[in-house]
Image (cartoon, rainbow, N blue to C red):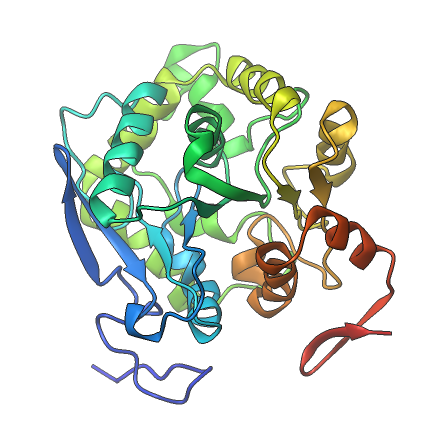
Length: 323
């Protein structure tokens, strides 16, 4: 097998690297085993831990470049594969309900050893929204919150692949048919994805029918309109610094509709823009550009976020610079 080279460092990508094809670390958390990626704690220079959560049908692989960049800045950053995703356990007895996912996530946070309030980053359908519900249930654990492309507006619709599981005609639903994780990952981006990256996203569904079954069971359990309402209502009284940073070329979530979510929220919740054209997974489409916004989020205040939006930016080889 040809050794893969990290384009950021020029070094071979080892199995424990945050950029490896599969998450290189695992831990028993409560009843279940989680796989995860974590920056090198020996390089830690910053006191604020970062937890990054992917959406349904994805994996921690989406954060590989973001983790590499955060590690370079000295952050202790962790991105797990949710239960039933990536190479985490795919248990037949997992309930796949919101409550089951939230309990599993709480067990993971405890097991991973994050003892202080952390920065939480969420992205994606259903599981990204469950990440928001976790924050609402555990505000004492969250120092600040970054919402990437995640359904938050009550008018948000399920992306077509997931909406199929809610077809009113039962026999037209996918059921436990193989979930096409590769095509799912490609969708929503304005850019072409490398075939090897798409295959990595799709591999869990090739390797095990259990992965597709968990998608089906999760969609069977979720009440999507109620989930949207819970998030909208819950964040009306939210007081922790929060930034929304949406790719403007998302085929599934309209940026304007998403920003309307902020209209009746407190001033601690702000919008951050990105100078580059990105889609549903900003961390996959343009991680360097996302990193510029993420560092402002991690190291600035909501007031500084607002001031930064008043500036004009242009893209260079070194990222976004003040125009």
